[in-house]
Amino acid sequence: MRWLQAVEQLRRGREPGVLVTLTSVRGHAPREAGAKMVVGRRQTWDTIGGGNLEAVAVERARSMLDEGRAVPETFTSSLSDKAPFQHGMQCCGGGVTVLLEPLPVPPVVAIFGMGHVGHELARILARHDLDLHLVDTRADQLSAERIAPLADADARVHLHPVLVLPELVLGELPPGTHVLVMTHDHAEDAAILDAALRTEGMGPIGLIGSSVKWARLRHRLVTEGGLAEQDVARVTSPIGLPQLVGSEPATIAVSVAADLLVRFAASDAVALQGGASQGSSHGEGRRRPGSVQA
Image 1 (tube, rainbow, N blue to C red):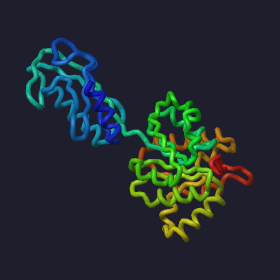
Image 2 (cartoon, rainbow, N blue to C red):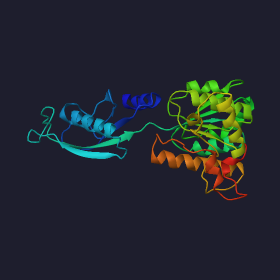
Image 3 (cartoon, helix red, strand yellow):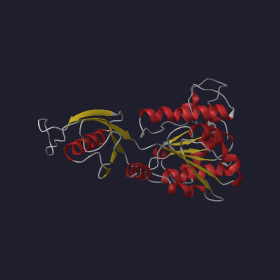
Image 4 (spheres, one colour):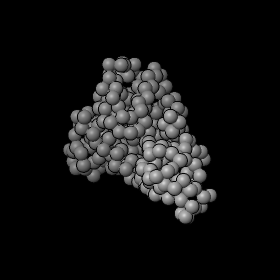
């Protein structure tokens, strides 16, 4: 089925598209109900019958892509010599209803550090349509047994067991990836943050830990790493929803996942802004979930 292969190709290439389906056919038409095609920005795959009908469908689909419309749309077309046409007469004698379904580019999340919080967070995010990259320098953290709960994931899960230099994985990630740093080693955290801030096109960056931890790492990145203040300001720490308080790994994971999903819903390109200053307004003695160490 070429259209299904095209859907996969667009996803792998991180390009949006539109799935076009004939949902109903009345009388004579070039294709039967259920026929599909896929429309990308520059290419189409399969066919719903050609002629004026297909040309109009492609035109409408590309208009949806250009305008970023995310809600499915339908239109009807009469295949009659008396019907208006834009791209040549099509006089089969019947009529069709066409459904246009956007195929958005799914978000990408990379979790560096698959400790207690990392595993809980992966279990939650795996239930959503996204690309999920899991990175750890400890081989046992990405073992088949540990990853077994993700076997039925809706997400596309990519494992990166790396013994050294986990920051090199950043070069394999697509532009716009949401990077979450929560390793077992503060030095490893620093190396990943430094590399992420220097990687062109990287998306929002979040760091688990206390405001004290982030202040120290921030100072190190600026004074020793030579990064500018506006660069390190791209890092959000603590991470998660400030309204959800707790230190249990599952609570932290829920908080971080909820914050991500809110941002995804608002816009695929929303950046995680703020920093340690966000952690100072939640009351004495109360910690944001992302303020504890994984």
